[in-house]
Image (cartoon, rainbow over all chains, first blue to last red; front, side, top):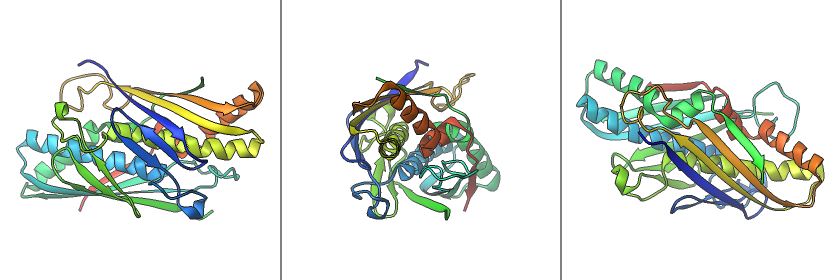
Length: 144
Length: 144
């Protein structure tokens, strides 16, 4: 398979708000007013959860089709906990990102338990966003 | 600091498209038509890049303020490569997620090189999304 490259370009509108452009969509990332933001869009940590849930929806449907599993609907709840101390520059032993991410899948299907378990295992194995969260990903920051 | 919990709820509209609700925002995740989607929103992999860029904008401004660095503007380019083979169920040795994520920061500032280097190091240390990508994060999937 040829390698795929995804790109995004962010421009700061104020210290908390940025407008992100991808191939042909615009997204606004911001923080709520209580965090000093202008509340014009979801937070970065919510965008990350949206990426995960959206990815699991797509992979969930692909895998269901392969397994011959009748998936009539899918709801996905995602949540993550973090300690904002390090982000805010305060001393802490805790990491700065999500300490754990929990996903609960609600598939509308008549599949048996064994099929559901195969489906769930394939999701973890195949979802790109799950992979990038669960495992280390080389991140290279540089100044222009 | 008290622990913060972020949540998102996704509902599938079709095999590729989901509508994600967070505290008070809606986001649409989809795929382009050539991937079998309905092209109503950015892809999950683009959402992940948006999360990273949006987070670096916020942390970049916080850290600049702490360093007394005059940050008049900030543009951030983010890109990541992946091999879609595993995601598509084809045999491969490659991981399914981004193999590498590259970030180029374009700060508009008159800060000296030493300050810029401290700023960049603090970004990597403090940005929650960077942490979740660069390091392992426990991910717990379950069926309702």
